[in-house]
Image: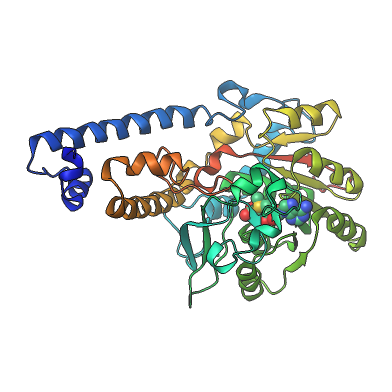
Length: 405
Ligand SMILES: C[S@@+](CC[C@H](N)C(=O)[O-])C[C@H]1O[C@@H](n2cnc3c(N)ncnc32)[C@H](O)[C@@H]1O
């Protein structure tokens, strides 16, 4: 038996967390070695994160497909002007200290939410993301943006995925409503500012998931219709309590967006936010409604190494993207994102503590990282990348509908 295994788990845990001596020089040296390994892993992780965690764009590529020509309808300068003139919106999205309520300032999850570490499906399902509450959930799954049966071995990698456990958010029992969202402040700033510049009155969002993005659009004065193929029961209930005026449509997003746009009263100015269908698939749906909408937003537009903005440019679309270096310099959202990061590090630590109390102490971090339960910063990981929202970007496209500005 090794010295590490002989030492009581409690003393080892104390030594790792507080730097206390275990009373044994050999074991103290082992603890120091683990700590150093941890530091190296974190430093490596930081370097990776600075480069964009392997995603596009990296470094100077942040100017890719950004229009700097004066008078262009979606230029960098216009976006910065629209965003910077919204002072109350800026104060809401970039609060100095963590706001008590989402009505007061941006939050990624409401206080009524609980973290369910390592007990959830790793793709979108209807009803509940918590496996124990929804054991057959994977029979209707949307791992990308197509409905399938992930219980069926024919689903291949997605069937394998159904055997893994991920973390998620869920309603805390007997607590205020829980909504959560993955639209970070800089994306919301861009979307809301451009909608205001266009005079948009009605936002149609495709892809509700935790509901918070739809609720935030409603809080900022828009009429909102939120479409979801796989609605979560708790989210729908929370939304009915918090925003009874918001319309929820539970159906396939492609057909619904087309129907909703065609049925909208003539005096409404429309924006469609594609956060269900992604990139090229979303663009196909967009083409069916383009002439009637003033603005369209496409989320996760950077995830195919620049393919999507390239296609938009080839097709002559007036587009702008949140990776714009000048915009992100002006409206960097790393400060408000830190509030969420702290919560996810605390949740990751809880999972680590649980692992330390049951497993072999020295392997706990490596095991959780290998299983993609925590990342290199110790943050609890979520399917969809909630632990690192800064890696994801949104593209805005000017539609054929009329604009104010
Ligand atoms: C990234 S989440 C949406 C997040 C949410 N808008 C936010 O910002 O917090 C994507 C959601 O779109 C849904 N979805 C995927 N494909 C869809 C489709 N074709 N129609 C409607 N919803 C779809 C998924 O079930 C999932 O709940």
